[in-house]
Length: 182
Image (cartoon, rainbow, N blue to C red; front, side, top):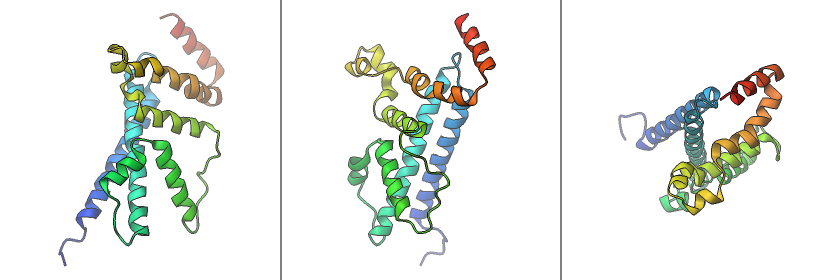
């Protein structure tokens, strides 16, 4: 028996959770500051959020797998092959895990078809394909021609919906007027 209170696996989980938490926090902070004059913050937000969410959801998969299989973790190839960078698949798995838990807390659940699903879809696509949009565009890659600029897509499908609900009309008109002067 080791004199150390935490196993190497415990330390790995805590480090991984810290990476996930810091990435999500940095992504949300960047997204709050992002605007038409600082578009790099959008990319920073999308990268950080996809990395943080993917890692957090993979932790759920690992813990659930070990719990279901007598402490045995899945193989590296199983983790990569089953989910890759697909945040929607990972989130769906995490929902299944949540449904199996006794005494579920449903305060933070959301219904299908809402903006939350659109955000998950967007981040999943970003993590799988459009994170390289700018480089693909510059080298005239087929994948760039098949996808939409992620910043434009964010604004058109998600950002505009958020603005409608949470932003005052007069402030939005002023910012749109400022944008049109550029």
